[in-house]
Amino acid sequence: QVQLVESGGGLVQAGGSLRLSCVASGSILVVNDMGWYRQAPGKQRELVATITRGGTTNYADSAKGRFTIARDIVKNTIYLQMDSLKPEDTAVYYCNAHLISSGGNWDNYWGQGTQVTVSS
Image (cartoon, rainbow, N blue to C red; front, side, top):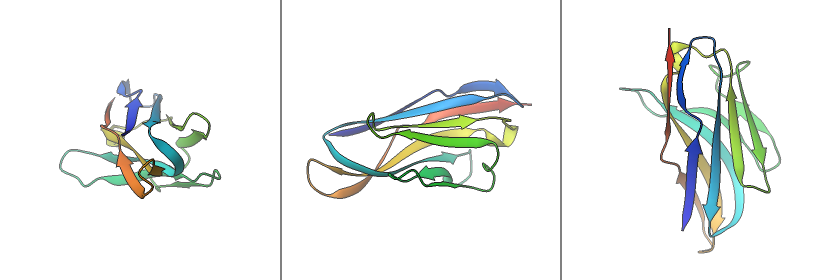
């Protein structure tokens, strides 16, 4: 059994900051890429940022210069530091991990999501 658990969401004023965390736990053999996605009401889920096992990062244009993704390989944890938040960043933020579990297969896993609300 594999679990991804996000934390750190909340309500913040425009211009403020939040730091999200996501821990992958359970019967995990290897974690490859991890990332953050978000889904606003009435919109499709979209990529925010990803990070490879080697530390290579990729950001959506909307996140560049404001968000920073980081990773702790040992703890199977990723972070998303979000600065200069805007009302349009309001969404449920989901953690994603591409990993091999004890079952031996590569698979994608998702967390339950954490709400981020930015007030104007």
